[in-house]
Image (tube, rainbow, N blue to C red; front, side):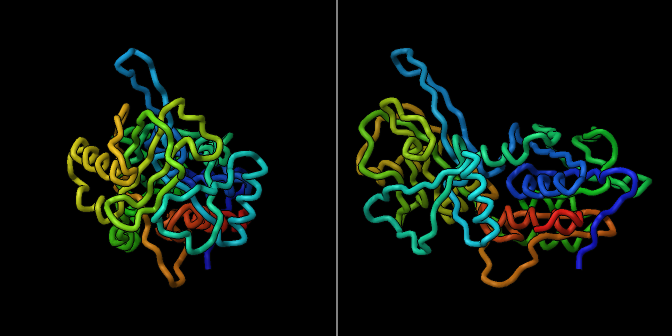
Length: 348
């Protein structure tokens, strides 16, 4: 049984640390329930692993090329009725589109048969929509949460106070290993559980090469180092390649773990070779870069799990896909569940 924060005379002030989908879903529901919600994130924008990278390069002839790469979550599906209803609303608002890629020969089959969805015009668009109007402090990593003398919370970044005054509650919506460092002084049991979550990494290649596109949009290779290969301009709402094929290739968790601490140029060379093999040709690369997601994939669980953590005595909560279930849907469900625990008007 959860208890909620109820204050008389003013709306409860809630700090949500982490502006991925889980944190923003929680923040939006709390705001709708009458809380004064403030978002904090170390990144320059909201979205977390629902991410898009913008790139620019100059070719040997001096021409400037620009591209975007959805280098985080490739796509997501919906199993629960609540998340399907949320998707329907987002489709009506024009920030989600169904993606029906032509798969490369030899790909794994989509065995669950569920529709795939992507945000438009880029992957963070869904999070930007949910976060609209909420106060945001970005590009500031919160490295400490501290109790004040009146039972409230203060957030600090390298010793500097963040936000305007104290908060009545704090929500941590970040990878479990990062949340553990903030939790340890107050809930060592939660911190211990969070540290034990086996989040899986992912190295991602973003590359461009001139030429005609292949007769397929995406690949789920059955063997080798690549888990996903996606042609960026084949996705809904993305601009045409302008004579270039823009590729995003996600390495498997096992391969990424093996090369987790390898130099970026080494990883890039290996993934370019793997992508060339998947394409069946040797591309003339115009641009290439890699990104390491240290905490990319939450473990899947077949059994029931607690969708969030909420301590009413401390007014401290945790949400994320490692609690609500792997993937975008799990993140959303966890954030909504925590909002319902914190505020009586925020039903899950």
